[in-house]
Amino acid sequence: MLRIEKDAPDFFIRLISKILFNGRSKGELSLSPPSDESGVLARRIAGEIILSDEHGAVMRKWREKFSISQTVLARELGLSPSVISDYESGRRKNPGVHFVKRFVQVLLKIEKERGKHLGPEFSELPVYLEAAVLDMDEFSVPVGIKRFNRAVSGQILTHPKLTKKISGYTVINNEIAITKLSGRSFLQIFGKTAERALVFTNIKPERAPMLALRFSLLKPVVVVYHLSPPEELDIELAESDGITLIHSKARSIENLLRSLRKLSTAMADESSGS
Image 1 (tube, rainbow, N blue to C red):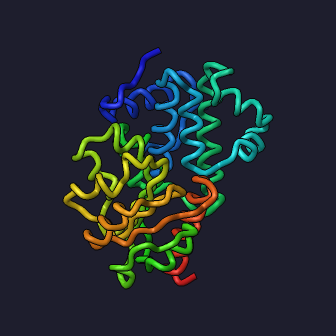
Image 2: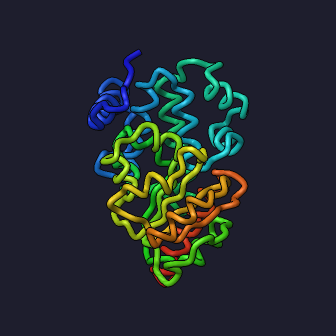
Image 3: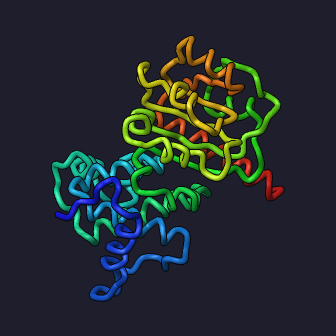
């Protein structure tokens, strides 16, 4: 099986996915046109699954990015949850092109029915950033820090910029970001603006996000530590850099992502006046 290394060009995954799904030999396999935002993302997910040596691990990664449980996904696919579990654990091997196509369509269908979707900035992420970035979105209208804090079930530990607004957020697997990304790559987690919240999960004390951000040219408005409480040094660094530091006590990453997407949807509704 052909393997995609972390530094492989992004267009390679899209090209192989297009070849596999453009319907040259099986017209029924066509996905949405690549000009459509959901179609671009669908091709990307499908291509990554098919070209990976670990199909199940990639399927699980994308299911978790969409915050969809195995039970919900299995119900929509008309399968037992154990089938999904078997694929993700590697007990079932190659899922096959038809299953991958259906899997991707169901992910996007569930997300659409929720009234929320992974934004274009997420579908355009470089491949090597996808493992580190669990979610990324830009708010339709800026969000106050106190409201954002409530959404992440947080406790505000530093108070330098509580009157400022947040224009977007990025949820990051800190262990992967710290160990795998270069300094230049790390800057890409800021998305379109530094006026955002960086939400870090999977934090180890010896690899604290505030230490990495200390040497970053860009400084976010808010930094969130999920579950792992910040050390005194983290708080001192946040205060020194004028960053609002929040400790999130959301029960799980899935709950955290769901709350953030709910907030983003609420801001979109407020922006449209609905």
